Image (tube, rainbow, N blue to C red; front, side, top):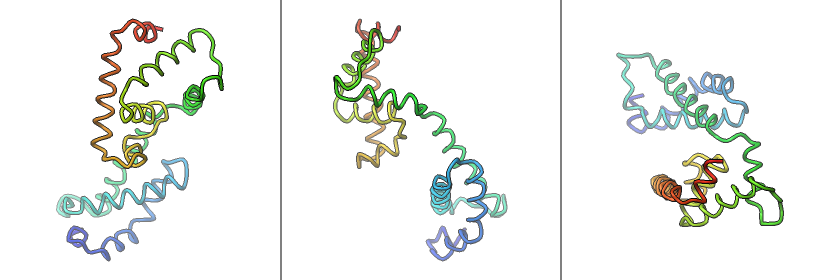
Length: 181
C-alpha cells in the first residue's frame, strides 16, 4: 500500500492480482448482475488507490483493509439502488413526460400531472433537468453530473436550489391542493 500511495502502478496491478477475485466474488454475491459487480470491483480498486496512504499495517492486515473498503462501497451502492424509484413508477413518469395527447389521464391524475409539470417548467433548465433525472428517472447525482458534463457540485447546488424553489412554490394554492391529494 505504501508503494501504491507513492504512485507505483505495478503495485496496483499486484494488489488487483492478489485480491481482485475475492472482491469480485463478494460483489457478485451482493449485486444482481455480473456487469454491476465488475463495475463495483473497478470502483473499489480506484478507492483503494485513492486511500492507500491511510492504510496502517499496525492496525489491520491488508486483506482486512481491502475488504473493509469493498464492504463500504458495496453497502453504499446497495443503499443508492434501494432509494431509486421502482421501475413501475419510472414507467409511469416516462408516460407522463410524453407529449400531450400521447397518453390520456383522467381526473385527479391529470390535475396532479399538470400541476407538477407546471411547477417544474417554472424552474431554470438546469434545476429542472437535475430534479427530473434524479427524482423522476432515478439517476444518482454523480450519474446526472456525467450525463450533463457538469461538475458534481454544480449538480448538487442546482438540485438544492430547485427543490427550495418547489418548496417555496408549495405556498401557492394549486400546489397545496396537489400535495394534499
